[in-house]
Image 1 (cartoon, rainbow, N blue to C red):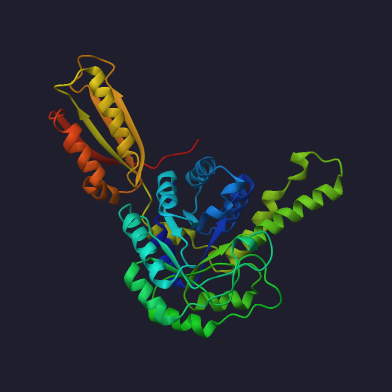
Image 2: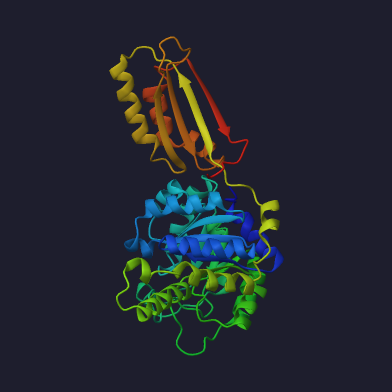
Length: 397
């Protein structure tokens, strides 16, 4: 399962002068098209889910498909929450399997953007998850996503970038240097001098939002000046829509499956073009060799209870499940009871953490401490607690 640490992936891209595509996906056709492109080109890839698109799909269902695609992949994959709207969105995204998050506060005053992002970083880093911040404002112009990003462009400044990164400890910074969300009108004018100054000052992977509409030379200039991640959606959406139109023109009576025939191939072609243009093609093996695998941890507790009847044990366990499942980085809580009366331990908790970093943040989380001290430890003195990680990768059938 080549789901890898996104920070390692982007550090490799930044250090080696190429950019990884973060392609927003909105259904299975997009997942298939993007992953086929990554496999075809041997490129690392980020499957990105933007909260601004959640009205088009059930986030939990699509995340399950995204994780399955990562498990099947032979190239390195990361999963990112794009343009999250709140801390709660980021916590839920991590619970569902994202290993990179962004909460967009770029439309707020600098001090408020810093405060929101710093809180996000504290939570996400406790889960081992890197954070993308955004400084400056990238507006929408036209096309499907434009209306979701109203307002005028606000360019990132070196001075504000230095303060923002210092006070938030973000892992990557999305900057505003002239791109737009959606489609551009006319010839885009990028401030590459500004980008070069930001890159020299920060010395960290930079991110560009609004990649659609740039020409080859502009992409190369962005990458040469520190851009290691390029967010990309509108051109994929346009390629898919054009394929649907062609199908309908070829057969006016076409049913749904005929209308969407070859849509993944159209998405694959555009995504593969970008992977080659941005220098990511052929880099997958290098990333797999240097990036830490993204592997969950199974926190296992087996125990016996004294002082509670069976109903009391169940009530305590249900309360614990409610409390512990809400702690950031916890993906699942399983509560079990032995099938045989003679077993050495009768009860178990199996708490799945998204990353080894959660072992420590979970242990000290106030909700866990309160539950354990108040309800669990007083009645479960006879217990064993062990943290496990897989020694063999999962194989998707």
